[in-house]
Image 1 (cartoon, chains in turn orange, green):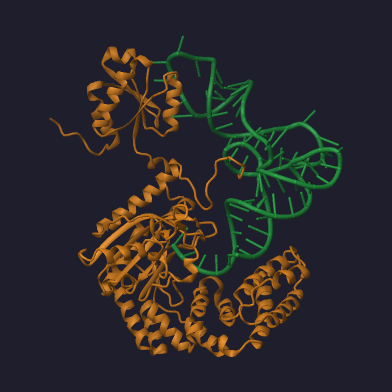
Image 2 (spheres, rainbow, N blue to C red):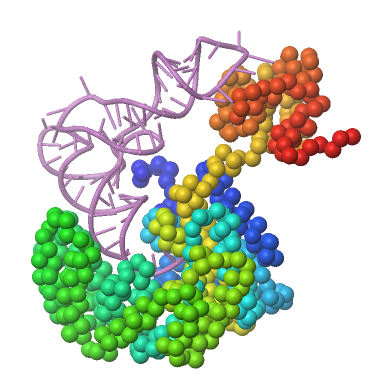
Length: 535
RNA sequence: GAGAUCAUAGCUCAGGGGCAGAGCGUCUGAUUGUGGAUCAGAAGGUCGUGGGUUCGAUACCCACUGGUCUCCCCA
């Protein structure tokens, strides 16, 4: 893999070979069709932006992953991290664009993350945004397009979760939390789907404590139960954890409590991972919380109030009503009012509750969202989200011209991955019908080239054989491997008769067609339902 | 940024301190005008990189690089 001089790819990058590239194009073609159908116009922006354009927009966690770029000794440039911030820059620089401005863009973005399933350092986003409208109909339109796009791709199941930043703010106030702890609170509840109520409870109790230690402990449980590490090894590893301000002494006490609790679970036995993890980490948290000043941690009573809130389950509208009553918060009520209007549009266009869900626990990580937020997940395969978006009214203003906007992006690479795993591509059909013009002998090349070209001029895809040494058998083999639909054979016999032998490579049939009728004949094969108009 | 795990032919993988293997694919021929199927044959490898142990390492040990998985975070 890393032999010196051997060809290799940069980390997290990949080539798309013809079949893969065709799958991608199939997806982008479908998406483009949906976007254009709604009147969205394409724009293109540079891959390289000024560093200052990107910084300060996404939040510190995300900005660590921005690729810096520039010539030797030059700095101040960066590869785009998403398509929304460049769009905001474009809008601020081109105030004359007619509003509301509907645009789409499908392009690569770069993030310096650790590659993983469904996660690449270069990937394509398909973005749609509606700039210049504060109205909630704009939000509804974006969500509707996203859901319809996923349906158009043929995904049998996808769930678009909808929430609102203002509702989350209300939940933060309801919890009575210091502002500094709110990001941790949001991160914790966002995991509800994944780790359940018990998991979220534990996450909430850990807010403000060392996340690094918690992470190492989670992994330590797995290593212990699997017999991969003994107590001494784990102790050494856990001691490497950043104490993040709670103090080393407190951290070490917590580690000891953790290891004591963990020791009660036998190694190499069929102990459920979650049970051991729950118990051991809880022991550690109890110690850590008792050693930490109360203003750094979430009170237990708050945790229970939040879990109680998140336990609300109902159809969308009654759920929103119930939330309003609980929160009794003016900003959150503005959010739920918008959500109701969004749902009304979705219902009107026939998007059912099997495709969307109001989910108060869904949080988006990017800092610039301020109103509705949404993201789409698929139940299978487990690949994270395939779309994400929301309203970001303040973002364009950071470039000097305040304009409201709402938008979403779809992850093209993830969509392709999902569709491959679900077997949704008909790969042979991705290759357009193509004829392969064989060559009888090198001397016939000019005549064959002329014949091929006249077919191309008439709109047919034609590959002309270029390897003079190959016999007919080899040429047919090549044609077959390339996925060609027909082979066209013109040798001395055909020339004498003024015919072309057309071999259908799929059905293993061949017929003699008069040269003058060839075009008509092939066209009928491509689109049999369309008959040539009779003269 | 953390932990685990893996790396042998183009692909999927077996093996094992002293001859480098299989299946699939590729190429050639049976067939100089008929692809896929069959048969016969061939090519293809510094066993990821670097170091260590050893008379000898592809194998054992260490480091590095890369893939995958679980976290963190996200499309």
